[in-house]
Image (cartoon, rainbow, N blue to C red; front, side, top):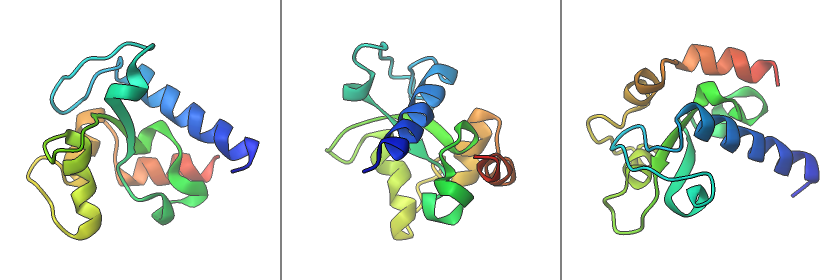
Length: 112
């Protein structure tokens, strides 16, 4: 991975976590700046491949908790990629939690 792409990804993560105060926006699980990478994920609401420049903008990101047992908010949000949508985890639901929309994310992504 190029240094530029690493920087873009890090800026995306940092801006999403900062906006959401290092807290899962869905369930409220809290982290700190120090342990955020262990507990949280900066999740793309709309798939990166569907937005210009990869959608690495805070308008397309939401902080969700990590996990591997099927109960984490990140795992539930990822199910949309498989065609499964859990109520409350659809892209429009997630966008509403952060005051954004696919249109806002698209426009911000064009400016990257």
